[in-house]
Length: 83
Image (cartoon, rainbow, N blue to C red; front, side, top):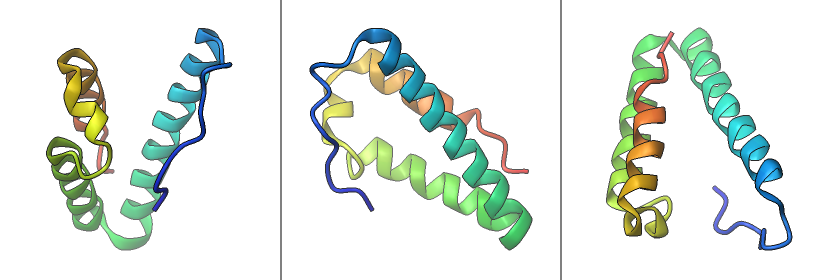
């Protein structure tokens, strides 16, 4: 698990949008991979545990500081299909 990310202060907004979209697509790819190799139940369990960790601040406590950002990230993860 990644423990920290690099400083992105010199990154422009367009690069940040591209990076966030790419990361979201990677999570979707991971969900499909888990589903096809371990089964739909395993993918659903992974998603459930990821959401729990997000909501508890176990992945990134900073996410809990800004309600709008929190709701955006959680809603994107919740909308990921498990198949």
